[in-house]
Length: 198
Length: 116
Image (cartoon, rainbow over all chains, first blue to last red):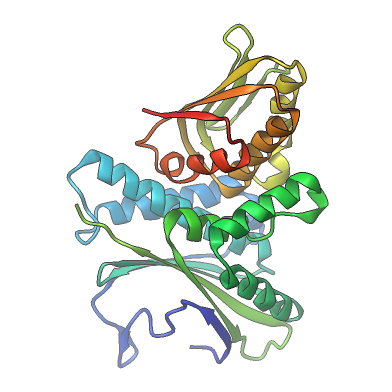
């Protein structure tokens, strides 16, 4: 694993668990995207989200025979993966975007990794710390109101705040050095969701 | 395409003037700027100052955070006008609706939401 520069929030640095360099028996699926033009294709983010949601809805640890519970699971995982992938492709400075979803001990873990410009790392760390500092719902309301008053104010972090506030997701971020490339930093965003088996 | 209908791959948003209802259907996961035509349609609806409108979302399966923000801002715009009653027809079986739609009450306290 690349050298960690900073790790904030509920990022699980020990996941996916490995033993002797091999992933232990957790259900874990990774997809790596290489195309340079992925950044603008929102429908591909959506297709990625739907793939992971449908796939994990059939994984024993998440599976439900109750159609309503299954729809709820798919809706939740699809929303979270879509938000993480949208962010990853929006802020990626190229090369790969890697999306990983896994389930272990009643917890669904979603990760999206992309390279960012090293100069943007410090402001991003600040921004993420602000998101974690207060009540996510209050912060969500305040930011939407501010954006309605002044569109230039932007709605930075709304996707993350929605995940925390409405989906009870625990979020974390890891910033890591990219070997032989001081201009980029590898940013991995993690969202952790409790799996509710009926 | 009429000025009261917006269609894209997998989604359709249109205003039924007779029923005073904005219908949103499909899966809306667009980039922030791509929501501008939809925001413009919503603003046109309230510029007519109808006494009441309905937002029908029972067939809107997905909405990303940019879309949710568009919806919240629409609710705030209506609150500022102060004289339009809003009813939301939603579905409790659609995950994002049961989780995020109740927040609309914060932005527009008089709003009524039916989760079928």
